[in-house]
Image (cartoon, rainbow, N blue to C red; front, side, top):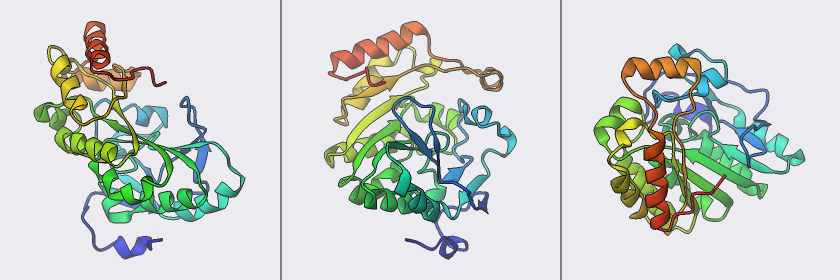
Length: 258
């Protein structure tokens, strides 16, 4: 297991962060299919305009991109897993593979612990960094959901400014599928720029070899709705979502995941 403080002065990521110690690693999850939530980081540097997590966790959006590095989380996790059974979700409120992970490696440390305890794990991410851990994942009971909300780099740079571009995520999905890891696409939330490009979007996903996807528009919360309106974005229309589902099913996708 890596020593967190070995990474405080060196590493690939130089964003804003603070180190904290958590009193618990696992918390009950309200997401269907997940029994527990495990978030090695607080906050998220992706800065996605459609992010609901600050409101959901009663956090201040203005400081959300200052990453809280939960330095002792792997040690806490090892203690808690002795009395835990169920599906553990990584990435329920923050991305476990945001760029800070390249420096601090807390997610990899947690996966090492989870593997030792033979846990069932569900990962949600919008980062290609997940492929770094294929050596661990291929021998685990794990499902990986990769969030891809469009394939236009320009739109991605506006709506997901701190996240890897769509092409990198598509390549990561292909690598995960080729490695035999259970993988699906989180096509959510789909925004209005997808309108008129639904078939192109689905074909890009299909080219990776993945055949499962979850499709949703934006689930608005008050601050989220106001933020998106200020930036001129809205959820994809119901008609557009139906087109994505139609093309997905015609390409052999399972769209009834949850």
